[in-house]
Length: 152
Ligand code: RB5
View: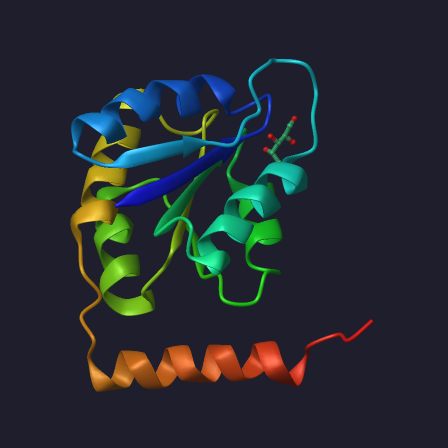
């Protein structure tokens, strides 16, 4: 798969550690920054990754900031993105099976690199269950994107 990855200054170290790991799983990684520890704004990197996922130039996206929370909030503003904040292995599997998430967010200040690698592996390797009830619920979420769409 093609994986777009992005981080702010508080997530750049974990982002950089994950890139080689994701490549070792056989995926192609597009690193959209940041690439420094100077203070930057997480929405800029969330949107860079989500734009690639929505456009189809990446199959999935991974975002890292200090907590993962800001990245998750920003990512879920993008129509077509279903981003989950995950810090445990159970949720990594469940959010693929139930929510068909296309973006994963984590917090470098919350989770260590070993657990983060396991989360990424499970999340990338778990398929959507495609159960009718889950499709129906995702459809209701997608309907919200239309109901509350803002047309500037
Ligand atoms: C940066 O200090 C921090 O606020 C950011 O990385 C993230 O945790 C925001 O949700």
